[in-house]
Image 1: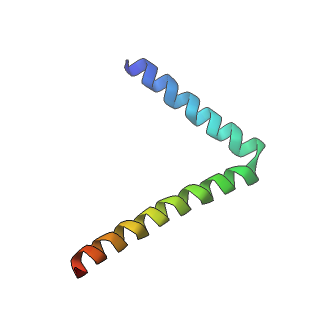
Image 2: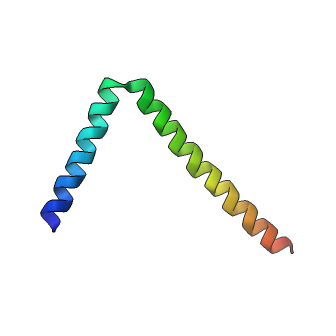
Image 3: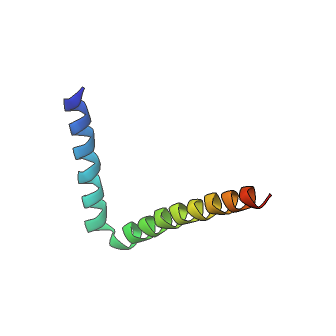
Length: 55
């Protein structure tokens, strides 16, 4: 099972490098979208707890 996991991780990394080299603008947009989603989720969670604490 460890071998399969290593192979899958290696393939994902190889694909990411290939994508970065062949389509840098699309890769940058994908990273921006991912960071934006994480940031938005953090803001939503913070807002939830602020509302929860405020009553």
